[in-house]
Length: 303
Image 1: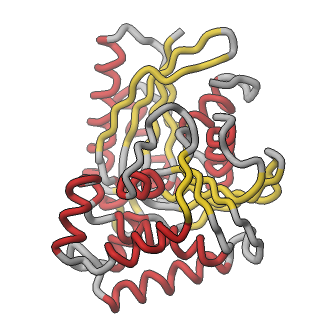
Image 2: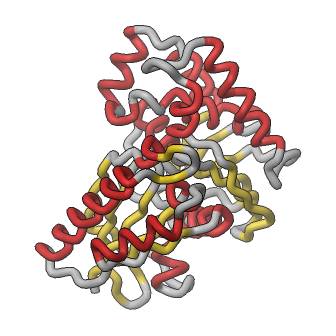
């Protein structure tokens, strides 16, 4: 059986299509649209234009599935639908226009899905910290021997930081200080604060972008890619300059994240420093695979 999963995120909306058989799954194809829904949130509400954008992308994804004769589709939403005051109205409008019910995950549910997906690939470290840095939120899960010990969701992400603090393409020195102050304040409230975790398993757009900028392909053979944490610190130090060299490097590698990669790396670097991380494993799986495992296949299946 073929099954589609759509992740309605703050920066991107992603469709992943899987083949399910005998309690196992494998990814067949995926499609990403940079919808930027976080940019349509005003005074705590997702605007009618933002809802219209979400509906348009979902209709496009539905057309893809119709052309492939795939009847099974599940849709879940994260920060852009969770952290607004008109969640119910937005979800109802999407249902009316597309016939799709969007399951809005809580921050902790999102963290659990990210953990389930990242650790199911079999190549993630058996103990450490998991971080999912998205456009509108960051999920942290501390775990040992494959078992969660604590999980939390923080209302900071690469796109939300950019929208809140940055006036041009790259943040100025003063804007970086403001971002860092917010990051430190939120990390200070994390349930995982105070831990020392030499190994970080990362999922999400910021982590994948860091891997690409370092010259790795995170969508390769299904194994975790390992990056020394010091290399990521150096990457942030170089890119935060916002000069022509930094711009060319980003445009050459992750052009669709040219405005969010520095805010995202600021979050990542702060996590590396706080938890004294030495190595970062970039997981090929994340929240969508975790959602498939936990919400569609019952939590007992693997890829």
